Length: 429
Length: 75
Image (tube, rainbow over all chains, first blue to last red; front, side, top):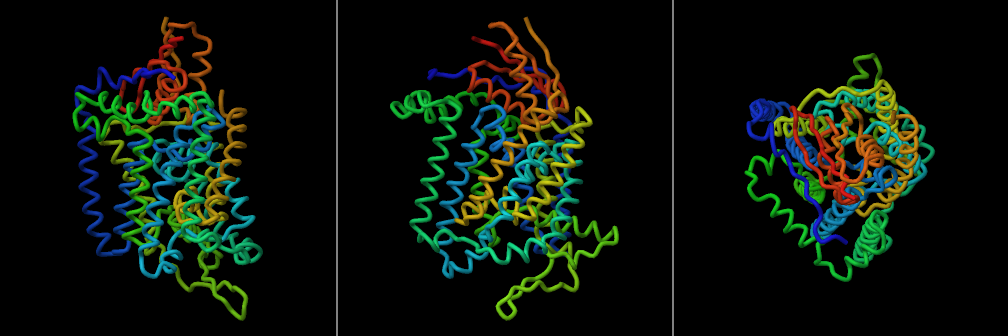
């Protein structure tokens, strides 16, 4: 292994000398946000916290360029696992945080029903396959789509159209799946099988094994042994020092708002935010439910009646059988997560403006329109089927010690492998 | 010699794949300049070529939201 790697020189000339006017717009946007929060608080106080956390998540995602899609896809497409390792680290940190929270809260059982423990079955497998395939050809998963919408990528706005349609279609069609599979499938909460300590130990062993595998897959066993033999030569601690050194002479603005944060920093901050959200709000991070509510509201404008869709019906136990009950009326804008996904877009827009790098970016070829629409549709449908996206059914589900998170992760990986094949064949010109 | 490719409007990870393909054709000591409007590129492209290949990279923001990444094929 080389002792010191070459460094990236950031912005040695041109724009860095003067501040971009976009910063002014960013500050203005921040101010408008405060106004909006005031009125939101008066209309629907339950939306305030999801909005604030949405801004934070969007901001962190944009600043650290954190891309869950890449953490799956780049393994196959470019043999790079840096984001994979960052996601695994984030999962380990979140797992530990959630465990402490669940273990030390009186009435754990209540909290565990609040966590992302959901049924697992064939629908998880199919949903995850569709989702993984979709996110690769759409150029980003759900959080990535929202982040890039905020940065001005028009392709991701097209993807959102597909996602809305897919999500509404999935919400309508969910009844078919629920009757046959979902209601008959168990939610597997690992501590119920293995005990608390067994579950968390198994979880951390699995995550570290995957971390090592990802490292070796990219760099080979030799580098791994070298690192084990002499972990302090050019490896993390020294690398962090080197990194800190390279930051000398950069001012606060450059560090906070301009230069991208390292992936590991992004994953640890996301993990911390997820933990905080769980602690103060009572449920971990999830996104897609809000988009489905929004899609359903849009569909009422087109004359549909989402009250009849299975997703919006209540499940009740009647003489030993689960039955779906229709809701009389849905209040689309009194559902907290509706505000969350919008705020992620705004948070990313804010970060992008403060960095002075916002622009409307057009797609390069018409093929991307097709792939964005199709990928968005598959993600929308897949996430309804799997009961969440790679946030709710993966990044929050695995730390909730639910089996469905692992199943979702594995089959998303398989789906992204297939998506990568299509990308290489049809999307590169 | 400096070589230039423009990948504006490409979705991830196509900028990296196209840069890899272009760099394969270059001789040692030559530079590739990649012009991109993908904000992730300044992190993902540089990280990829520095850590995997050991090629030094330089990033210049030439316009708001457009970057030129200079990659030196070192060996």
